Amino acid sequence: MRIYDDIQLDYQDVLLRPKRSTLASRSQVDIIREYNFKWASSAIKGTGIIAANMATTGTFEMAKALEKHNLFCALHKHYDAKELVVFLKENQKQFKNNDLIFISSGVGQNDYDKLADVMASKLVNNICIDVANGYSPYLIQYVQKVRKQFPKALIMAGNVVTGDMTEDLILNGVDIVKVGIGPGSVCTTRKLTGVGRPQFSTVIECADAAHGVGGMICADGGCTVPGDVCKSLCAGADFVMLGGMLAGHEESGGEISKKLYETNELAAKDNGEISRIVQEKLFKKFYGMSSDYAQEKFYGGMKNYRASEGKVVEIPFRGDIEHTILAILGGIRSAMTYIGAKRIKDMPKCATFYRVNRQLNNIFGAE
Image 1 (cartoon, rainbow, N blue to C red):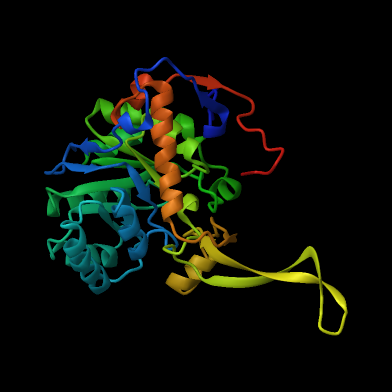
Image 2 (image 1 turned 90 degrees about the horizontal axis):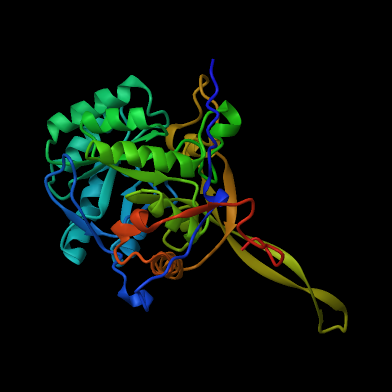
């Protein structure tokens, strides 16, 4: 047993230091980046925000909404091959290509068979290999198998939180390593297992390791506001994967429910009786993919050798995703002007952080 004494930080533990800048307006920054990968054959242009491959965020509807703004979507792994191919054909007609779409895969034989069927269509080149524990040997074995079968594909895989495993995955065929264990808002892995690492420190170490061997990272989880996305990009993340920030919208998955609430306002009925006004509010389910709910929904129940590592929440319905996308992109542009980064790729070079004990004044609410 040993203890690492180095301080480990989350996004809320730091703030960016503003600097003198030649940028007079947010309109002068460039948030579109051209990505060139270690293994994948072709370059891709986009802004590195990716919708998480959760059933509630990695939907067809979400993919279309994000692609209008040059953002990525990792489709969840519970679509069948036929559904995916039909969507990819339609999406290609609308956007000319599927460069911003990832097809998700587990590491079982059924996962591989479905992946092979979709890849055979030649409609998509991006693969997201997703397991909870990226330290198990079967992940690298599966990566090697997929890389051998699809040598020109763009492969993202994870999740890990250390530099050594980041390097191992890249050297064995991964282009983008997905980093983060337990930071998600509906993930209970840290609570159940005691395993994890604060996400800001994870991004710094894993980005350094990945870039040293020609790869990239995707920071997966832990962002609650647009400022966290900016901090992640400044810490070295090439891509940032979002779940909770994109949940609860029209384009998100999850069942909608209605609840009635009494307000403090009074109204008179026809008979003269005074009563409180009742309002109807809409909510949408958001759940972790290792939760009891997800296991029951997609796998027929939790296996007796497993425990739930996710939770289910009902969040207020947030309407169309457009306003949330614009808030995130606006935050990134503004952060770039504050630190003097003309290109999104330059954000880490321009970033200096303060360690803080508190970053927000929440006297008027958590928002």
